[in-house]
Amino acid sequence: MQINITSAPDYAMAEVSLTADEKVVVEAGSMVAMSPHMQIETKARGGVLSSAKRMLGGESFFINTYTSAGNPGLIYIAPGPPGDLRHLQLPGGDFYIQSGSYVASSSGVQLDTKWGGAKTFFGGEGLFILKASGQGDLIFGSFGAIHEVDVDGNYSVDTGHIVAFDAGLTFNIRKVGGLKSLFLSGEGLICDFSGKGKLYIQTRKPGSFVHWLTPFRPVKQESAGGPLGIIYNIIRRFI
Image 1: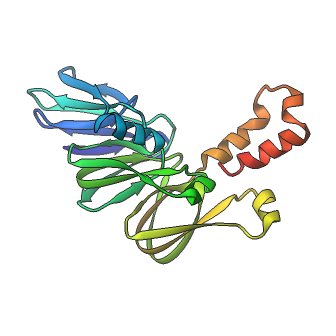
Image 2: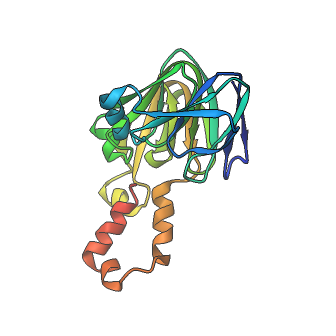
Image 3: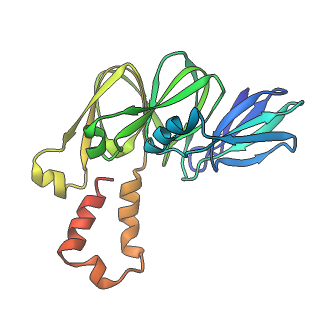
């Protein structure tokens, strides 16, 4: 399998070249184009229970496996949101991905949903994160461009900008300053990483983009204003 990332970082797409009868596992809805002899199999990966756990991690219940039947083939893959893609070769350890960032992998990579604790929920990342393990190719995406950080010690990131990180990093969620800064600064919550490993962050935050778009939406005046509207706009800054 050979993978080439094109059109990065704004609208990245993965060009995956397969040898004869080679397989690639792709998140549902991510196929852009493919060779005519490619075969597709759709199923709940790992059974119903495992797929239900994947949904808790922000992924689709069903997953597609494409096989280049009898001849070398080519498939183009892209996620739904605009942004970047990154290709990694997993050496056999664990690797963690935020909800919704998984795009594709080779058959040697196993995916599981890991309980992240209540701190990830209040950090805007959901209660579960995806754990990728095994050996093989892994493709994940972001909203905006991806920036790599080699952490050796401590490093702090806004929770909405986290994409993925190595298993060698541990993290803790905290608020920014006091309650006034938490609700009025627009910065939400901070994730403090510690340890040694690689961290991937995205240059844009979905919640901030939605907040920027809100004034342009054709909504009724009474739904946008008043105490409830103010509270809603404050909450939107955290996600």
